[in-house]
Picture 1 (cartoon, rainbow, N blue to C red):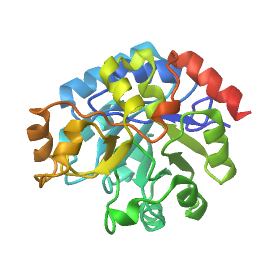
Picture 2 (cartoon, helix red, strand yellow; picture 1 turned 90 degrees about the horizontal axis):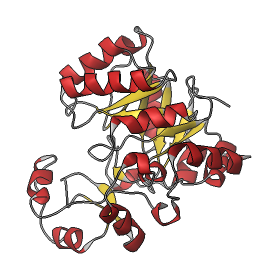
Picture 3 (cartoon, rainbow, N blue to C red; picture 1 turned 90 degrees about the vertical axis):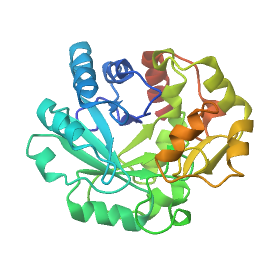
Length: 285
């Protein structure tokens, strides 16, 4: 089974501020769908990243950005001009039509059945179903934060849309991919699994934190709910009132780093991307 031109139904989850563009190229070259995390990059940096990845792979890849009110129009303009195969967004809705007119497949992030139906009605080509287990920021945009904390299996089984569903959250092995496919998903998005690859080049402290501490969902570090390792610093911040997103991130960063990751981090393998994808596909079968 392929997904938007990729050989395998595996999408590399975008990891803003922690992944180099070259990770997306490595994933796409391995037969999965690599994604450039455009959040945090200037328009010029995003353009350079897209061109770097395009020079390193002939396989399809994608770009991810935040939805309004956090969408930077100059970054979206780069996506429209550079035309990657795939574009995904989170935190709301980006009008898919201008992207689709340029041949770009579009996926929006949903944390509830209602959000998935909303995105389908808006015309997206796929829905990324973000379960409660997912690392990084929560994509909830309709209803309360608590409404969006739905376990992945329950969420995928409940979503009823005509477009492909890409399951995301806590998946680090092929058995997890197989489970969501059996529930009706067309593919799986893995972030934390690729975080542990040498191509992602994370410092040892990040990986060790996710091996050592449980993860927790909290707005304490950035002002918006996200899942990260519950380090002493994050525990300290959780006892303080956060500033609005994204102002809180700048203040928190002065006190130390945050280590985002999903609930499956302790089971993630430290393998090169190509080997990891081979193992995932073998385990799926």
